[in-house]
Image (cartoon, rainbow, N blue to C red):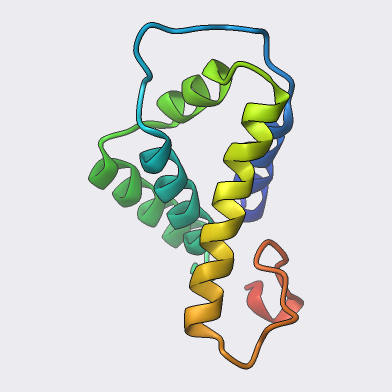
Length: 120
């Protein structure tokens, strides 16, 4: 699976409406989820090949102590579309903050957009 498709799938999961579910214990903290998704997004943009992305993804997940299925479970545990929107906004804020720190002269660039020059 291409890194762009993997991130696209995650975005689809985040935007999908969920049932009004409640869980007794969250599978992970909101902060952990945001950190992992941001790291995965960065790996997808920065990785020159699918193999390198997959290796980096495995490392990111292992370091955070989570799995793909835990990420999906966390998304599904969100109570409603508003919770999902807030979660995705946190991810966007983190991506934007990192871009602001690293790319002072690149204010107009959308952190979620992959330029043709970034693809391998």
